[in-house]
Image (cartoon, rainbow, N blue to C red; front, side, top):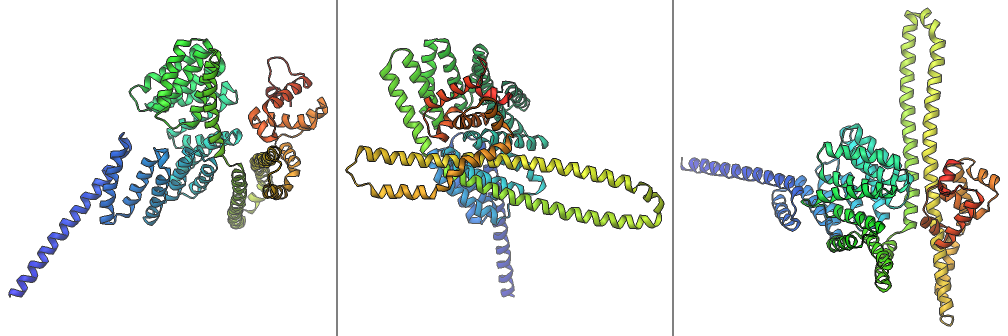
Length: 572
């Protein structure tokens, strides 16, 4: 009897302890979920990290696999806000991927690629950013129907932004417009982000009418959804648009409106963009007092932000301003700072890696197109088999009726299929040709890099003729042997160019009789490349390009006030 009582007592005690553990486990799970929902809205990043690490200890204790993944992902985002801690951020994103995959999260791979791409953008490592953005696009295509369009929109938005930063404007526009359509289809506010970026790109292309249309669409959407950061971004872009159009008074009003909305918000980057815009206007209007005020405000903000490209631009504006005031020594110091910072940015770019990534992407897309064609063909065969079976059954019951209309239906279906196939093939061919032209342009950059190395070696030999440079000479000769196949690159470039712009080169050469070198410059201008881009591809200095373009303008008899680029776009 006593033994039975002891057994019952132990069972009762164990049950109570088990219930308490389950209750504690549930409470801890709820606490972690609440923390994860709150953490995106806090401003104190250091305290947020402490809270997340504490929550991570609890999640490990209870072996909450999915929540551990989300907490590591949150730490990745928090560390990404500090450009010096991007390695730590990448570590947490990689760890997050392991837990989320283990928990069966279908979004894990897409999120991982997307987050790492953003991190590499912050690190100004565009080749790596492009590599992971392309992976994000691939992963988004494999998601289920409910997630597919949202994620594909986000992936193409990121890819378009990277292409825009790399000055590949055609590829940027293609991806941004694709992103906008995906978001528009699911009525996502991200549609307006894509529209903003498209509008900004059209400013660079000097297509102000299209720019205004997309920027207005974005600003209306931001205001409808009361998205303050989006509204500020849109106002700044309208300021940039009107500045480019020469409407300085209207531009200043937009920048002031944007600045007013950032006073009570944590939008330092947008505030800096507004300062930069106002500085450019006051410089144009020669209002020195206001220029000094906003230069001081801009440099105070630059000390707290990591925005190297924006900093280069503001340093150059300061150098120009001081030069106009006759302060040449101060101007030179600011110019040197801007050049040093710009050089450090350029060194991080790796064009050979970019070219290999673009080529790999082209191969992957080609394989995917083949798979899609096979799937369509297989589905079409099933449909044909079903239709034939149905026609046989119906033929027994209504032979004469089918015989009367069969010929007409066959002609109609054949015509429809032929038109659809023709349109689809034309679309795929255009996309393929554009990709080949981008690839050929990237390959030209490889040759330019090699020429720069040879030039650097020759300068070293010139400065130090007595020093033994045999090792460097052998290394450069090896590079030349590896790159010998690039001798046919211009022919390949012209071939791809003709496929995208038929008869352009022959028409220009036959009508105006320009040289082969001028023909290359005309091709680059037709692609909307800037003078800086053309200098890098042809390995010449900016003055030479300017002189050549001026000479081409005379040969083509371009009217005054019309650029060569505009003339070639409308007369070819």
